[in-house]
Length: 504
Image (cartoon, rainbow, N blue to C red; front, side, top):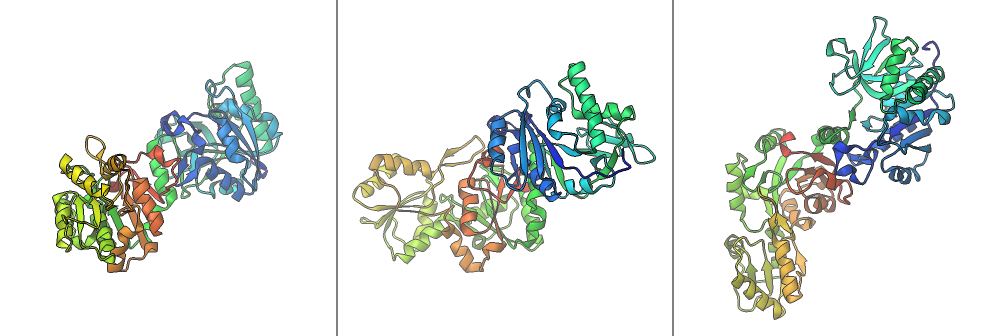
């Protein structure tokens, strides 16, 4: 069957599975629509088919199939037929392929499972392979969970199975298969026999392929795609690897000159340091990056943060630290304000006093709200007295809670809500992340170019959103507030995602 090259005219994507190991992401969407590096898995495959010149696709859906239909209805440049596997819970992908037998209509085709992120050149390489019947394989690795292939001395595939031993393995299959018209007819005859005569609806397509290879009825060649990236997504670890590879993190980081780190939730959580954080920062500095530190937490001073970072093995000076109070101070100066009332910690009060402001004046121009870890009832009463008299409110930031080793604890956002319920008043201006004005003092001091800057943090609505507002790159780390599944439906999309800054 390998003596004549046939150009496949159709691609078959098997996408009926549930993807239970990716829950809760797959609680409401099919696995093929989970995103990696901001792109749904299915789109990687569609793009690769289009690049390879294949403009007719058959997609077999099952779990949350309506979502796939809805996703595909506006896709241009390719004709898509949807086949429904209503028995997806009790069948496997061989049965899904069986359902496409009439639609393929005897044409040569490419077959693949939908749970991969792939380089767009992979299908093109498979199509261009001189063998009419070929399996896309990666000779650069051996993976226990993957399908492996064995070959004979002539390079023909003699076995395909997850059970192929490493000593016998030529390469890992990446679950992309090219069938000539003749090979497709043999394959469909076999799976029809398995499904209809044997009543077996729960096996992999590779089981039928293995039977035919062993009987000498299929003659497949390996098509080596080593060097082209691909990741089979079974679990969160696979997703993390795919996020890193397909976002281009390691290459794009070379052009970054400035890295701005969030602190709590990114470098440490409460009193616990994130493993590898100090080493990652040290390597960035050694590679010539300028490193700075950002925090919305207005309860501490810059000297407090220098000391805290030093205790974690991270050298820093006050010029590298940007707090939400920096924007507040700039604003007060620009408005020529002298007298304020501060609801905040002694550290915040000292910072503002050192900047020349009168913090307990009888007739303040503003009530300044900070993250007050020393809060008591009398402080609330005094602040509300001024607010009720018509004094406007300024808030250092807006975080609702602060991460800790035992879970979230109330931050200034909770205090703002309490004062709103009490007085009916809200701040006329809020500083700190995601307001890009927070980094304005840093930009002015060091002439920072947003296009060559990356903000690293654990929160979508502050760190990642501020990066968007500032016009720079963003990296989300999953050691603080945000879980990976929350990223799926967020409007705030980071360019890069890492489980931990220690992996940088």
